[in-house]
Image (tube, rainbow, N blue to C red; front, side, top):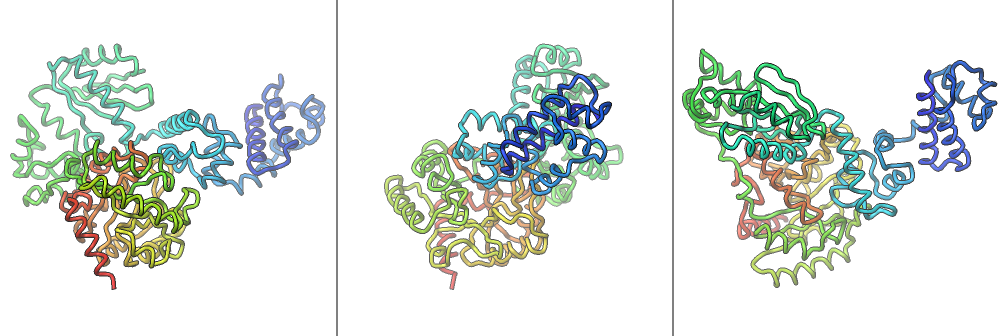
Length: 560
């Protein structure tokens, strides 16, 4: 066993001892030993336990643990500490800038146990609320986690889009309009997770290679026939597919759709996908309506294109207001007034739904009843000042372990609408998690089911649920389902949007904004809703103010 491996084990032991509040003298001794073991000028395994114990800074206790590790492959004290440390906390120890003291605050004060939850907290600006954390530290931790995510080989669409847009724009400028250029592949279909970004162009290999050489952000390349692969300095692979003017539309279509979509098209034409001057013309030759790139997933889109029943997909401009957002009353960064003015004056929306956390969410400064009523007073005052813009009185009510909602019915009935969400007890099996959600859905005061699975992309799987049973329950009880637009969530998964739409369930594209910048996430929610086949008529926050007023009122009057 190499010295470095032994040293790392002791360093981890010291970190966990500090994390779990072990004797500070012993913890420091282990930490010092870890450093000493790494610097020894000889191979530890070549020495006896007695020889090792004689080394300065080692001693008998450390030497015995080293020998235990060498001969058994483990250290009993370390295994005991590992057993009571959540996996996500162990992952945090690998993040630059996060030591045991900071992790302990994150774990105990903010109730965060995974990297995904930590990254989400950084995005919400929640980390700076904890003792010992500032804005700079928060940004450094966020960047370190993004680097960790990149090492997994997958990127959030929102991350990749920012990088890809810059590459696209600079390449387009360099080509000076002399060549065709387009996104293609998974990126063009707006998949939520990407392993690369693909572009297709009629530029020559020499021109693309010259661009790569010039753009210092692209750090390597591999040239194969009709394809040049390079890597952005962030770790994101960028692939350039080479085509020609005459076949560009055909190649664009073939490289955009997934394998199942292209296979369905090939079944309609014995010579494969035909060629034409545009993608629209190719679909026309196949007797199909044009299929938007987001839908080309090999599901039911080809049949619908044949039957002329493709949905008129929602656009960002269809959105009339925003529901499920937070203010400084709970864990938001901006005040209620600041959030409202941003929606009214910057985004030109008709309404804002404020849904601060309920009382059980102590970690997020959840509202007790007196603070709820204090917020209502401010909302009434602002609604007079900002008319005709309206702030709806909402709440994000925690779904408790048994499926009941936070707050008694007497208070819930006074809200304009209620978003019911799970934030705790995420390790239930599918049956229990499903029954829990269904009970919450059946509560007459539940208006919207918030982020149905609690997933955090690239870091935390959603809790397992029976999607059909949950969606069926929403249909039976007239409950809308949230499409949480935060790029880390995008929950409800777009793969279940079609089923919800078929059942007549409204979807609501909610940014879950904790600061004014968070409202921009509705853009990503719209993209993923398009993949799910959502139309404006089936999206709750595409209702204009009068229609939404009537919708909320009718739901309240129907409660017996």
